[in-house]
Length: 168
Image 1 (cartoon, rainbow, N blue to C red):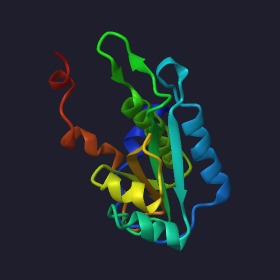
Image 2 (image 1 turned 60 degrees about the vertical axis):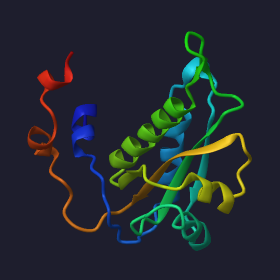
Image 3 (image 1 turned 90 degrees about the horizontal axis):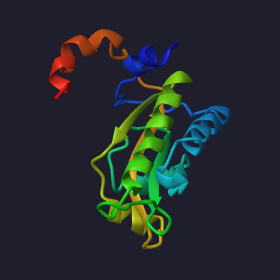
């Protein structure tokens, strides 16, 4: 499957059957994050892998996880993140999001489903997992086997803006 087919196949799954994600698939998902590009190759991404009951319960205090059996909290280390010299802006959010996207697409290529959860309380995650001040929880990715019919890969013709609307 080429990349565009893969991108069209991926959708936000919000109900999972609870079947555990196989360790070999998790390994490939983590490898996708490891090889993701980062600003100045600083690699500030730190991943919190949650697949046991205790960890999933803790993260569910901060976010709705839809019954997913695997949660990856993508964090950024502000102490090592690259900085854009022209505006002094950290690229920690960008680097962490690129890694999250790589993991999400790899999950899809492995026959798994996912949802990128943006609405979560980072302070609850920080407290529940005793994260140091320099480690910021940036993205929450739920992964597993979805229940129900997947969204059609052809839905984008109706649900997305036209290419003309994207261009300046």
